[in-house]
Image 1 (spheres, rainbow, N blue to C red):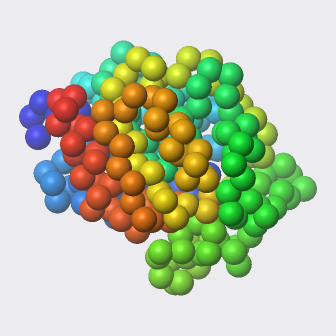
Image 2: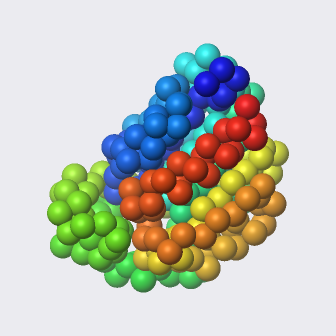
Length: 230
């Protein structure tokens, strides 16, 4: 894949880097070997963006950043790095200056909002028995069970962290909308993708977990973006 960028994948709330598993396999089958999946701490937007920047720094050349869910806010914050040549949003937040994931969520509450539960330590969980129907209803019940049990909860305060300089205003962007998303309202995804002047927007009849339920199409969009910036 000479001339192709390093692909850096950033996960969102209630999951880890392994959520990208099926998409990674699809990208590998397309011939990509320089793929990195960041494990962000989900402790603050600043912490998560800094962890992503460190991964960007380790890349040998240009980087294509891909963010799922809250990972979209992370790539929006970290994507101003000189090595970053493009941004791909997968059912993701793409906040503008002064916006936060929590503020955007309040504009159109997602169907699964009642299934979120804070704990006494300040972390916000997606109720395990509601995970499948909320996050990944188009995966098998077994897959939903595993995702629910292994979920990585964010500090609830992270929802309120705002963006100062959105990278999508200065870098080429691509966006995938999930029309059956119960975690980020499709109306919010449509608004965010429309204002960023994306090179391409695709809509999949998928859950929030499109990176796992529709990996071929998600990898196809990433491949298209990689070829465009390569």
